[in-house]
Length: 336
Ligand SMILES: Nc1ncnc2c1ncn2[C@@H]1O[C@H](COP(=O)(O)OP(=O)(O)OP(=O)(O)O)[C@@H](O)[C@H]1O
Ligand SMILES: [Mg+2]
Image (cartoon, rainbow, N blue to C red; front, top):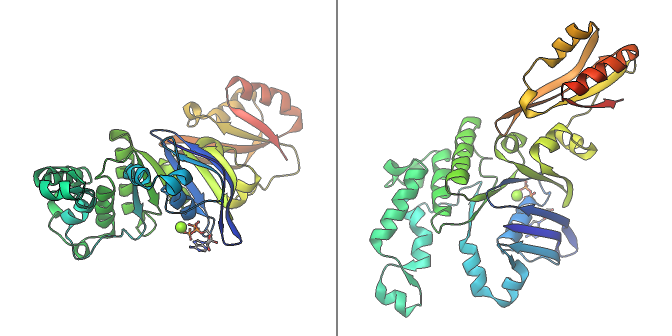
């Protein structure tokens, strides 16, 4: 769907995207994460052809964006039909009601009069078809009964639902979301994320999610890229990024390991299927040993419980503990 290789983007002398590579496949929910100023929005704007880039390659649906921008503006417009976008501030038109806000892309893209369609070489879409399409989308986002309301009469979450419906009117294959939940409270955020997941599953739309909120990433994304000052500091499957964070990633998450210097510290990584079993207490009982739990956490990633735990054992127990852990299929490493 999206293939980015060694992408570079400058604002004048300022290198804001520095050698970015990533691939987003059909049906994925992919998060772009980073602090303010990291280059997240810029990357998103490159993807939908709003910004130029000066190096590397950026292919969307098999087309090199810079090539379309320079040589095939019509093709670029057509490609952008396949890319819906939502924003933190919703970007609704206040003097139009919910129905008309959602209908905007249909009315700009198609003509509802056969005469004007021919005159302006636009495609034709009848008013009945517009009504049916908008109502179907309002139904999907749960706002059918608000179709006559104006934006000022809606809550933040409802406004974002309208924006989501509008982003889907031209049947995009990709939905880009720039901090779509950042202005919402945690509960509303959860509802909007559930809606995005539903859209991803039922309409088979790939979603690229820009956010600075780790909880959002953990909740819905399958893969993520972490940006810091325009550079990639981590990329890959969410499970791996969070369970085995590299040094940079730990810094980003504000995590550091405080480890006892006596004994042996073993870090355990629990795969999905055994995260919630009480392996550790069972081990202590079976092997009849003492140990300390240094720290640990279990998190929900993508609906799966995943955890890691650091235990501190006596050197003398090393062999039997590692033997036990190995047998129980928990990943481990010795940390100091
Ligand atoms: N139009 C522009 N002209 C010049 N510099 C820009 C422009 N837009 C963004 N920048 C700079 O590019 C860098 C990346 O900005 P960008 O908006 O992509 O960050 P971001 O990760 O989306 O941040 P935030 O989380 O605050 O939205 C910043 O240093 C910013 O100042
Ligand atoms: Mg931004």
